[in-house]
Length: 360
Length: 259
Image (cartoon, rainbow over all chains, first blue to last red; front, side, top):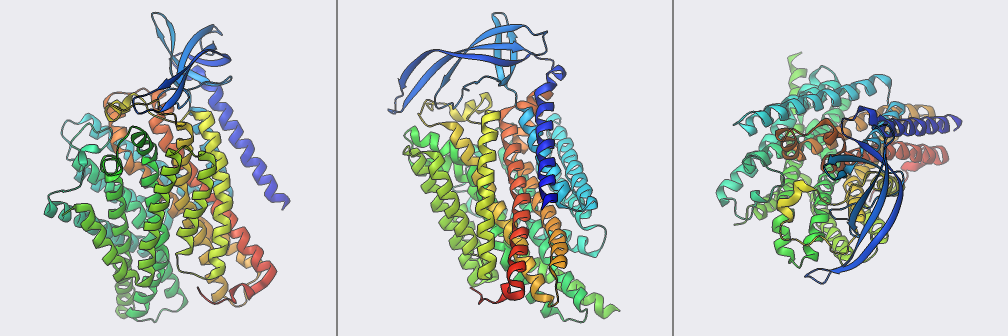
């Protein structure tokens, strides 16, 4: 028990240390960084919009000490609404990135890197204590390498004029999953089968989506509602779906294959239907919770927009079309991938495991 | 025919085919959680205090996700206990993150979507940001807790002579395996969802400072990190509860009819 507390204390200290590194790194910034030293609300006013929503607007006078400009102190006025949909209320000790304009300093954005560092510190120190050192370094390595490859592809996509988005990201997805499995499972038959099953199930799910969309002429699908698009939305949506579906399917196939390899280790002389049945039953158990994971992630993101649109007097069916449409589509496709991964993985593993036996 | 409706139908058929009764329950669970989320949105929209509605709805969503799964009653009970505890932790962390990071609301990049919408709508968007972070993590928390608990019960069942020390060792092995794959699920989900945003950032040559501090990206990353922290704690807490139950009851933890 004492050991537990020591670990928790250690995680806490690392988290705090990372947080303070973020607070003190303003020297690394080119643009001026300031810290709020005092706040005074100088004006406030009630507001009512055209939909009868009551809100309150405030003006606060911030005294800001510039951290990377030899301690200069400036005052900045900040307007915000109580709802803070597009504005921020600042408190003492908040750090802010500033912009210099002709009329003095203006707020650019709150400085968020200390939060980012603190959470990363918390996660990684926690992981360090939760897994064996070898597993920890492999997981870390896998995430870093995969993120690196992903960012490189994004940069390529961003700088190229007309990149075939879908093929590029499909290849990338296969590469990323291969690497992730290699790092987690090591080199061997288990990793290969998992990878193959993952790729096949993902492909099937995406094909199903493509066929249904082609057959129905994309009725009821609103690709144009995608946010932040700088290129043709449809291929980008497919690319997103490939990567998202793949992660979830990999999780499931990995569990099924691991379970069946465990069976084989217990006793090797089993027939096809043993593995097939066992694979299906492992798959059935995790199918529901895994679908829920993706569903929650996709739906949660849309909540603020839905509330905003409801408050702006839109009806539910319009909101569903505008904000949740693509999220629901992606959840359904992912769920299809997850469901189909069960028979695909069970069949593949069962075939390969029994064929290996007869070959001997 | 509506494409999404066809796909949902296809999903229902596949679920029934592959999962049988369990598949039907999964579909029902998704449907119920959909309703719960709509209820959550509606209540917040009506002006109920978000910090009261969120915990209640989260616990309900967790209950649906967990109790509509197949498994021993005791596995489900431990999973539920674990998930609710971790949910509390994630809620505290989400509030802290929101307070420190000002993660709520929209930025200039959203101007297109926001055209014609009034933004002074009298709902505190910082609460909405907390809701997003917590709901996103819910599924992952429940999944990890369920996987670890079920696997450990399996180990106890298969190994008649298992000792507490042995179980602890198994817990660490199984835990780190599940941790690895579950992290990758969230990681890939986050990467996939943010392709357009990242391309946008690179096309417009955003500075390093904007990558590290820009709200849209940091919010996504923080949401993912909270999910990962949720998974990690979920696994730790679930192992602790299983060990505790085993310590108290020994192999007696298996003596219960399946639900």
